[in-house]
Length: 312
Image (cartoon, rainbow, N blue to C red):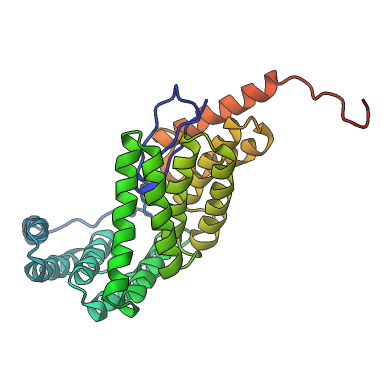
């Protein structure tokens, strides 16, 4: 039967052992595109300089030369704003990178300013699609949370990030029982420091559900996935990719349990969201379509229900 997926590269789970787990990263929704203005020769040269600086930023960051990386990132951003404008996707993405670099050196004031500016720009440049502005709002909230924590608290939140990555690695090796313990630790840390009404908490909870499913506990996994779907809908909205993935995972859990009636509308909703965001050739669209086909076929061959106890 169908498979499960999870955004941001976290563990994916399959509905049967015969189906390999599909690991996917949530892709950003395609931005509203407008014809790019013709660049002058001088502007093209400036963008070549931008690309060169961008490579330097990556190298400096890899070498932990963060103050130097920040200066280079500022120069890169300045060129993009000069040539492409501050509301262009490239400039906003560079501003997001600059915000992350400020976070890496724990300059919370600078990181907050950058995240606040990103949120303002994302809000200005998006009309109907508000997914990126919602993500920017949560990124700002994360910085504000980190700024309020002491060093021990920030270390614990970083530990939750590390645990989530380790859960994925253990999952890939089939060590689900060990991964379950780490997933529970990550959930507890996020619950204490970020609260349950947070996308990061929902993702860690989804990781835990993945392990329970592979340990033969679909009922417990389903209960968690229902909570994940509700939290994702509340925090990111029904039009967000992550919500589509939540529906796909939850529907897959229903399929495993043979509960086809609630699975169908979930899959149909997920299919529509993924098609709108990424088109019909995206791997998750194909996976979702396959799951929907399994659901419809399974319902078609189900035997009629037996007599109820009152009739027997």
